[in-house]
Image 1 (cartoon, helix red, strand yellow):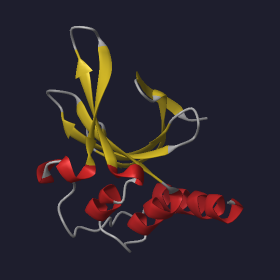
Image 2 (image 1 turned 90 degrees about the vertical axis):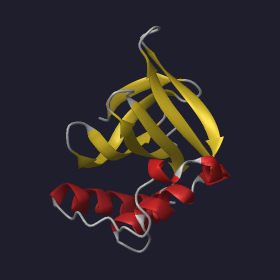
Image 3 (image 1 turned 135 degrees about the horizontal axis):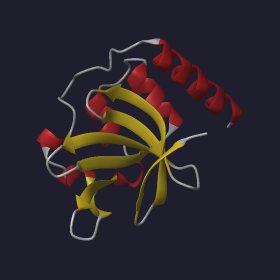
Length: 138
């Protein structure tokens, strides 16, 4: 069962599917909404509790973890050309989102250009197998 992450419009509930990089909290991750759409996410700012999400698919994630494309390219290959900034609002004690075109996302909000995803621990290997199986079923 997936772990619930947050509730935010326009997605509803978002659930962690895989945490790819974790330091103090999930830094690079994949989450899904209730309709199983996948989003690649990156943690941006601890003080503002801000994240960036882009809609993605299994093939794009697999290409990233297989080092076929850079992490930045994986974000830029968003479905529909949209990105979402997710920001915690301490006044309302809720998360809010702001939609922008991926072309409007500041360079510093994306993984560094041409950097490949290099982790390959057991969790990543298991997630790679899951993605491959899901692709076969499509």
